[in-house]
Length: 275
Image 1 (cartoon, rainbow, N blue to C red):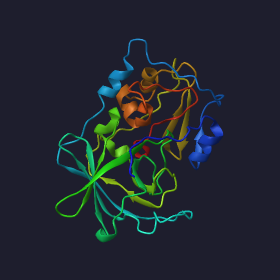
Image 2 (spheres, rainbow, N blue to C red):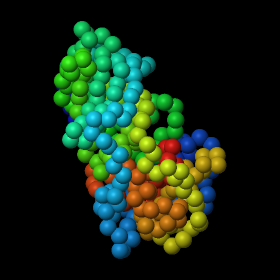
Image 3 (cartoon, one colour):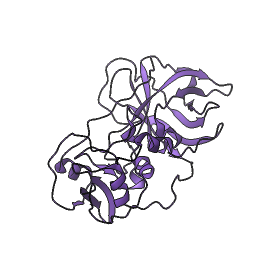
C-alpha cells in the first residue's frame, strides 16, 4: 500500500562529518565542539513570519517538473514487489487546490500493480550533484487514480511552509512498502523560475551572534556552522541575506515545525545550487 509520511536522516554535528559530506572543503575559524542546543532568533523577530513570507511559485494547472522513473542498482529484495516495478514518464502538476499531483505514464500499463510499494518525493539527490547538509525531507505520494489518457495520478501533500517552491525536492523514489531500499528513481527537472535570481551570499565576517564557521567547496561558500548564541537574524545579516532567504536556502529547518531555528553545531546551507 502506498502511504504518506516524512522521514529524515540524522544531521551531522561535527567537523569530521562535514568534511566527509563536501569533498575538498576548507574550514575557516576554530572548530566548535558538537552540541544540540538550539540557537535563538533575534529578540524582536517572529521566526514563524519568515516561513509565512517564503515565495509561492505555484499556479494551478501548470506542469512544473518532469522526470523518468527507472530502475536503479539495488540490493536483492525478497518477494515479488520488484518483479513488475512501476516505471515511466513523470510529470509534477499543480492541482486546483495547489497540492502537487504526481502523474506517471507507465512503461507497461498492463503490469501496473501498486500493492506493496511506496513512492516518496525527497530532497535526496540521485543526479551526482552535492547534497544539502541539512536532513532531507520525505513526502509520501498517495491515492492513485487513472486519468482518461492512461496516466496514474497521485497526490503529494507537502505539509511544509516551503511547499510554494518545491524545487528542494530532487527525486521521486520507489521502494517496498515499509522498506528503505530504493529500486527505482526519477530525478526531477523543475521548470519553475528562480525564487531569488542571482542570490549569492557573501561572508561579511564574524560579528556578535554570528561567530560560527564557514565551509568552502573550492571557491563556493557552501555551509555555515552556527556557534552557541547565534541567531537567525544576525547570521542572515552576516551573509547579506534576509531571514526568509536563509530559511528558503534551508527548507529542512521547517521539518515538523513552522518555527525555523538554527542549531548550535549543525550546519546550514548557503549555496542556492545545494538547496
